[in-house]
Length: 370
Figure 1 (cartoon, helix red, strand yellow):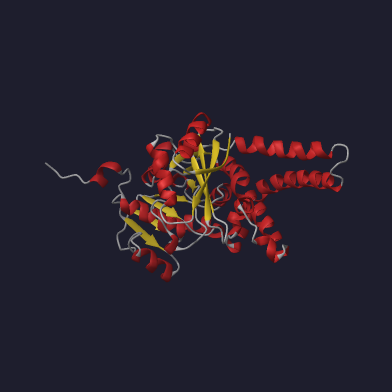
Figure 2 (cartoon, rainbow, N blue to C red; figure 1 turned 135 degrees about the vertical axis):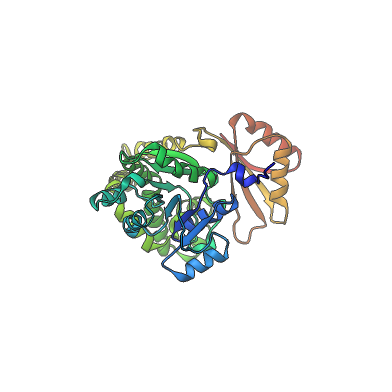
């Protein structure tokens, strides 16, 4: 009887998989596939980045005779089409995908160049970190995250299935979309929010020093993604400008109405303008998918915990012991405070029981709302 290892059972890709670009995404893909036992070949124009990624176990260096079944191009947006075209020519039996955040541009450039797009399909894992480079890579970066596969008429479903296998092997959830729909979607959920976050963070430069000590969850949530690489985002935003601009234009118009209302906050129509703006935001945020991709409205319970080791672990353990499933969680701690704030999200029908159980065990509840 032949021995079969666990990785032989639960992986879909045969390998080898060639990953071009050993940064955060490329090295993370390598780490995730290596955990499955897939042979990963890494390449990068930077010898230092390649050496680091290999040392971290994300794959091996190229060798003569490598015949990858799949090539994953994980390079900066402005060179994606060039590198994809090169990889298509160098590996005529492989399917090539890229993981750039804009999909229409590379496809159009490849078609214009006469590349063999019957073996190319763009994809985009909706995952990342605030840090970059191979040292920031994680094998679990894609677990539970959407991975868009941007199909087009030039490639068959059977040939493109290997990219779906990649996404599933690293733990992602496959989302089929055409390139144009993808680019419009990321304008709303990624690219415009990046600019809004950045613009709000830039206003903090003018804030009095003392006021920044009052910063809480609101400003931190809005500006969390503002600490981003300018060089990378110039490329991303430029490549998707046609979809981002209308979103920001509508936002500018909304902002102008609010500014006009604030000129006379008690004037006729001003309270209504502000109220309708807030209500529109409520409706928008309610459309965001909840846990497991379902659109639900959750109840939030805010618990105060002492700033001592083990408190958060004890809280989460207790919630699990009473059989209540957490849908989301957020932590906050103000500098100098002796308490932390844990905001947990649960189904509305579980809110009252959770509050009663926590108070009965001595936990302090700051707020609860549906």
